[in-house]
Length: 178
Image 1 (cartoon, rainbow, N blue to C red):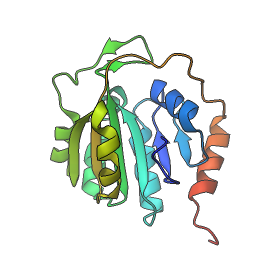
Image 2 (cartoon, rainbow, N blue to C red):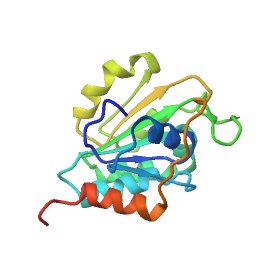
Image 3 (cartoon, one colour):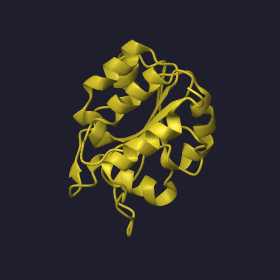
């Protein structure tokens, strides 16, 4: 979150959303609350409606698996301004750590097969080095980041209401003067 500029970012629900909120709450963040698997759908809508802005979706492996069909939509639309970072801990961290299937299914390969212009995997310790070049790539692009299972202790819940989140994001991404 600290490496992002003013880029509009759709953040999936659950612990990733809470961590993003705690690390760097900002009006450019659209936090999904309770709608698992729909972050990429919202990011696609933002990318379509704001073709001059680079849109980021910060997602988790469980969320991507829940809405896997949307990967094909992202690829088919060929949105050059869409970037998708997937944090993969091979578990549903928000609901008790149940295992996902990403120890056997490589989401970045599904993204490539779905028409993403770029899809690669990095380890958590490689993210800081890989992120700047990734954010400059033409999309749709996915960067899957393998992380260890576990949650950050003491993180806050998103305190904004859904209408506030929507209004903040709309205000932050609206074309000025339009």
